[in-house]
Length: 123
Image: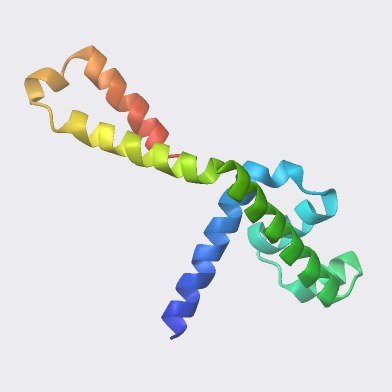
C-alpha cells in the first residue's frame, strides 16, 4: 500500500513537472511561484503558507487550480503527449540503427544520426 502511494506521488510529481515545463509560462506569477515551491523545491503546503504569509488552505486551493489549468492546457494542446510519443519514436529509430551490421554503423552518417538520436532521447 505504501509503495503504491509513493508510486502515485512520484507519477504526479513527474506529470506536474512535465506539464509545468510545457505550460508553466501560461500560469500567473503566484501559481508559478507556488508550483515551483511545492513541486520543484519540495516545500510543504505549510512551509509555503508561512513564507507567503497566507493560509495553508489558500496554498492548497491555488496549487489545485494551477494543476487543473495545466491539465486543461494538455487536454487541448497535447504537447506533453506528443513529446513523449516523439521520444519513443526516436528511441525506436536509435535501436534500429544500433541493429545495423557493424560495417554499416561505422559510416560517418550513421554515427552522426546515432549521436543526434542519443542526445534527443536523453532529454
